Image (cartoon, rainbow, N blue to C red; front, top):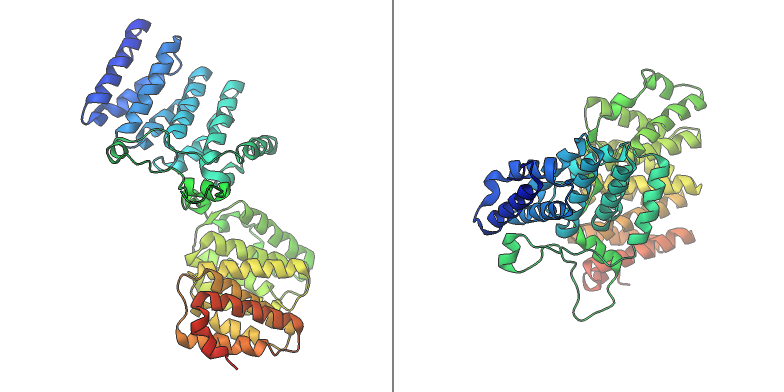
Length: 431
């Protein structure tokens, strides 16, 4: 019916199918072909009524159980020959996202598909692609940015301007309910509110609109070893610092574009070689190597954990550098190491005590800062034996002859006290 060449019959057919979808107990059996017909013949129809009815039918089909299969079908329209059909398909996806949010949609294929309308020759198609992307940003926030990095810089800047405009808007809420939600009469993606507090933070609420949104989960794993030049190991071991710098810098640029990384035996070799360069005599080379390790730890996550023990000691030793760019790089990398190790204190404990008793006060202070950052994010409190070890070392830090070490120790003790409660900690630091 929706494929009828007669415009009046087509519109009537859409209304008939809509009535079927609304009243049938399980109308999903023919959903795929219905969506294909709507995308191919109805969304860009001449009659405004047909276009409106077809969009409503897509929303009704989305309500049945989940919008995911409907969005997947509509994305097929991004390959249509007629520009108006492509633009109509992009608009339909935007309206589904606007109505239901992103929780029930396969974001990964949708984000990948954005490249097609953005690369279209027709300006109307590209404009609709921007509208869809802005709608996705309303729900995803900054988590969408890694998926847009391959867009032309001018277009990306234009999108960022539009994002800044909607970032100030109230958090989005699901406007239409799935049948399962209608039965429960409870929206799944409404931003939580505090009845006793009317001044909630919009940024926090926006995060709740897309709970746990992690760009890493949306990215494809990249094999970074395939981006290395044939002479990589020769250049990284070169006696000329500029050659070492250039090859590590090229690796760093590739890593910045790769949110999620794939682990293979060659990746381990890359990590080990970079670990050796932490102690490089050239501070620029060393800093680049440290930054690469941070990207590798963040991109690999758990598979990186076995390399923490072999490369962390060099980072602890390097923290004697006072140049702020080096300090910042080490802090970011050690934090990434801890996350890759699953926030397991046993992965960093011995290295902390090595640094905390180092002859260099800068190393001692940075070790206390590192412990403080770890304690701030661990999921469970340490056992009493570990609490005593940390407390004893930090108490000694309060007596250190260097003011920076004393301050870092005090801050860390404060974080430890918040974690385990003063009642537990006080017996270990009393007197």
